[in-house]
Image 1 (spheres, rainbow, N blue to C red):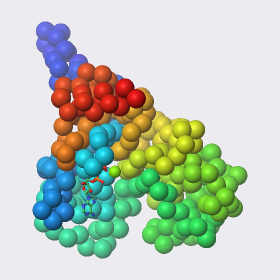
Image 2: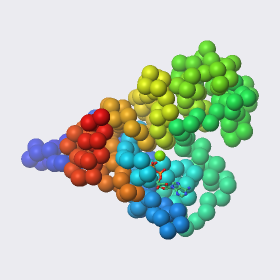
Image 3: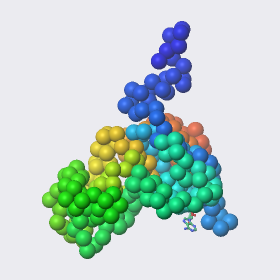
Image 4: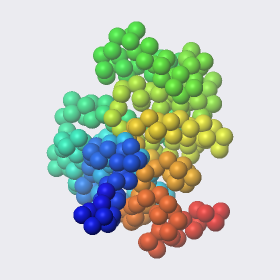
Length: 274
Ligand SMILES: Nc1ncnc2c1ncn2[C@@H]1O[C@H](COP(=O)(O)OP(=O)(O)O)[C@@H](O)[C@H]1O
Ligand SMILES: [Mg+2]
């Protein structure tokens, strides 16, 4: 995009890149001045994050910096102490106001989440784990739910495990089943909190492959991760958090290779010097 003199202005260039990258300019989720305190301890401090439709944002940072707590605000697993969250232009979380149960259900249907621990029901098979919420939360018929579950198992490469219980699946397979389960509610956005950190590298790799496919298909995602290569290759932007603050936010290469902030530099030098 050029102005009248044919000069690409920085803002216009950013817009052009956004469009070129296939991401819309529509903001899907907009967290404003989000803070969380536990007693006197403020662990998330006035964090802003605006995520466009189809965008992947990776959140990195040292342990205890508030990444999980901030992420959990997006589906109200963690009520913020102050701040607002807007989804598709509608305020869905407002720190001053407790949402009703039906608002919460609506929010959690829109925003799926996967954790480090997979939390699958041990007494149900893979496909039954995926069926469950479709019937209870969406009111889908058992037959429709099953068809969708099988489609999703295929998508994560685990059709053959449909009738297997979680304990007989590897950690990587369990996490892929958990991703399929979250996708079964047709979320508009997915949150991931260190989905591979409990896994051996090889098993982590197969989970990252599923997440990469999901990102390529246009899913809007926020991913808390220590997988720097994934963050660099898949994320559109990286946010670095330290001491509850969003210290740096930008294009992956810039944040990882030429971080502006001293705290980011220190963290990355420790990560890359291992
Ligand atoms: N439910 C809680 N009650 C009290 N303190 C908490 C709670 N959850 C998290 N914390 C504290 O908040 C800080 C940030 O935690 P967390 O968001 O889990 O960080 P990260 O995900 O970056 O490792 C830590 O000091 C942690 O001990
Ligand atoms: Mg965490």
